[in-house]
Image (cartoon, rainbow, N blue to C red; front, top):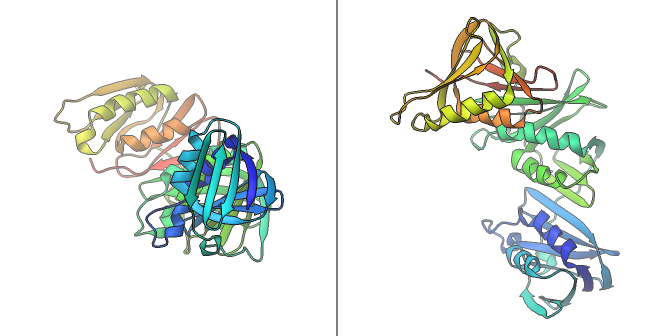
Length: 363
């Protein structure tokens, strides 16, 4: 293998795929990235056996070939080089890299030892705009669980329902649902949330459509010159729509920024109670109030003007409130609940494509 690439392109590719490479696996090659020539391009790949990311970059290739090299070392080395052309040459299992007055020789592992994700068979393909996918992931992925005891809740569920396409995640304490528009076909994909976090990083740098190719075991997202392949989670997603209340006794409409501010302040005094705060609404007071709960540090009560219907209070995790308020797009927010024991709902009153449900805490 002998080729030339620009420092900028190689550094960007290594940064994109390097997050997947892991030192925690039983195979040493999983800590490496694969550098492989394909026609007149170079493919830079990494995998942890569950997720694989490949980025293609243009190159001037003199000799074809492939090698795997330690991801962290080569990423840091290339990132430290000045802009310009980098010469790469493979000498048995050593990758020699030279750029100006900088040169290195990095010991590699044969490309034949690099695991390859199985090919996707019986393919189904469709596209979504990158801007839509980015917004949906920002609003949904934080609600997925990190508890492996219930694997289905560690995924983001992309599915069709009554002719519409949805993206949803829940950890059983909160639930986020985003409507993506009309569904062209039946879809049911349970994608690991960590893969979706990697996809979010990829789409944030792109204006291209996201091409989605899948079968029953795997899904591949292609964004420009980047491919992300991941295994799907097995199992049936819970019927989450039963958790979403249809009507409310208490509703408050207010400025999103004001709701976020009073919640953040109250959360400072609620650290000893795992972030627990009490949110109360009073129609006669025309305000939404957030107060910290049972804190030895002191107490805090903050109010924001609101258009309130009904009255009542509910105890919630302040971090969950802050998370959802940070990803809503509009300037206003609608907060709805039915007393202390039932789920609360947060949404933009001017948009019906996103909702967030938060379960109450025992007060």
